[in-house]
Amino acid sequence: MTQNPPGGPTILSTLYHERIWPSHWVFLATALVVPASLLVFLPINLLAGAIVALVLYAMVVLVLVATSPVIEVSRGELIAGRARVSVHLIGTVTVFRGEEATLQRGRLLDARAWLLIRGWVSPVAKIEVTDETDPTPYWIVSTRTPDALAAAIEAARAG
Image (tube, rainbow, N blue to C red; front, side, top):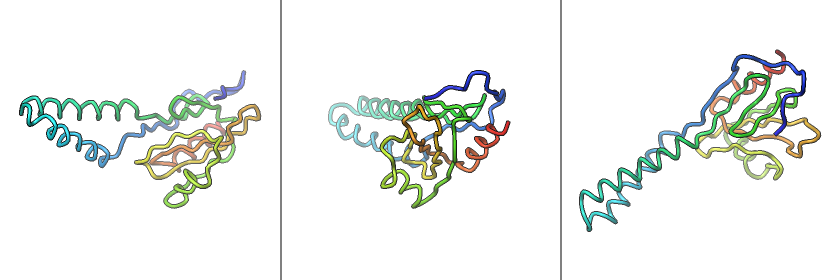
């Protein structure tokens, strides 16, 4: 996305940091790979079935953890996953929960919006991008603490 403006102020400390870990129920649901693997491999060999089941589950957990994005407000910019934008190019930050969050992720979503959505995190922050050269009107970011994210962006803009 966009970078800090040249000569713009920077913030040396991290004001907000959140890794969007999968919820506990996601790990429990992915454990269903264990009985599925056992059903396939038990007729062949008990030990092979158990080993394959555990290796597959470990791989699924590893992928879930490795792909968990980070949201951070530091050094005058917002970083969400692989995208970043200067806090000086951010307009209004609006927090949505429950049904309103579902609408923002669905029917009210602008196709040009940049998304960092995880299905296991309900609240979202809608972050307006005011950069006229950026075709993205706003970001929708899943976060467990949207009010803290909004406050950190506001503090970064003020500081």
